[in-house]
Image 1 (cartoon, rainbow, N blue to C red):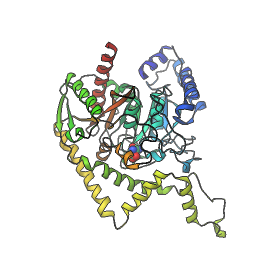
Image 2 (cartoon, protein in one colour):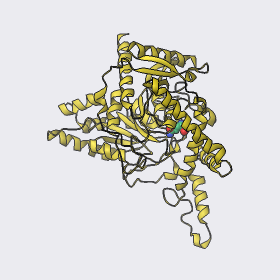
Image 3 (cartoon, helix red, strand yellow):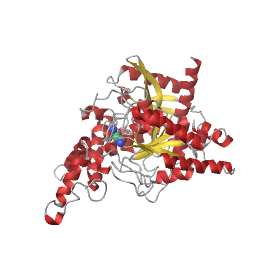
Image 4 (cartoon, rainbow, N blue to C red):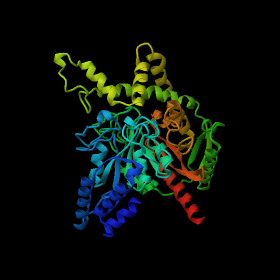
Length: 489
Ligand code: GLN
């Protein structure tokens, strides 16, 4: 889609301003119902688009992404724009600087339509934890779009943006991509700068793109990667190659591993069927499929929720009513003893933070406390190392690991929101990649019929560290073959 639009822009068949206006109009018409956006950026979007049009008129070469309108998850900072992270505690927070990914996209000439809804501080799997609004799944508005990047996914799936950025700590790009029939990529840890991303769990978080095709995701991803001195965990990941130029469709001889633990008898038979069909397609395309074992997979979810909650309790300590956003009681004079500093901290956090965020801060603080650190946190870190070993061993024999992205298609509003453990189980296949730091991509692998509706479900490819290229190439080959078959039917 991006390449097509780019060609039209360059050929003068459309202008970037028209394109931006068209998407802004769709937002105006549809977003009252979908609730994908928290903030729209009409004025700056049109300005950005105009600059691109002027370049084209002058005969200058423009980047593939120039003039193409996208949406940004509202935990990524854009200078001068309200950035809430889905929380009341940042309700009035205006970001003073651009995240590195925003700087990079601005340099490409990308157009930003607005900031999208998310679970508060990216904690959740349905976007129901946002302090602001519910986002609906554009494919069936009685269902959730997934989370935590549900707004970004709904914007793209609902035709309110061409592409979008999300963040993924344990599945928040891949799970909504699966629920909304999109492609979503969580890059290798360290490959995309986290500078300007409001931290959830710093050793897990990565920013990545959503798109309607693998090529679109490759185009946006290529413009995000690179070392950044502002992020201490940023990696030197070699040349910034244009990944979209490497989608050759040739996957002959590649070996795809399937962990036997993932296809156990607990797997929904409908998901099993779609997964088996996807594996058949990979074989038809010339890849080999091999059973492997992830011996520590049953610990992935508990280990994830111990370490992530610990990092959350530490990262969110900064929201104290003094440095950022909301401050309850700040009109009172602490020197007159009407309000103590501690009261300001406590009141601000009590009013400003939602239930799920508080639950995680409390559990994380407990796990890190002196008496329990060794028993929980330290042990979880050791098991995290073993989970990474599972991948190292697998990659001796296989090029990628395949699984469903989610254990089921999009669920209905309210189905899990009162039962945190049920909600956490939605992440069973996705958290492993963040624990190990490997790249992982979700793409539409088939549909499941529920109540007379065909709902999409994603397949997940997890790759070797810094080998996004193979994931993109494989998913692209799948997508072409799948779409071709559909048009022939
Ligand atoms: N759903 C997972 C969680 O709640 C993942 C969130 C994310 O990736 N940001 O922790």
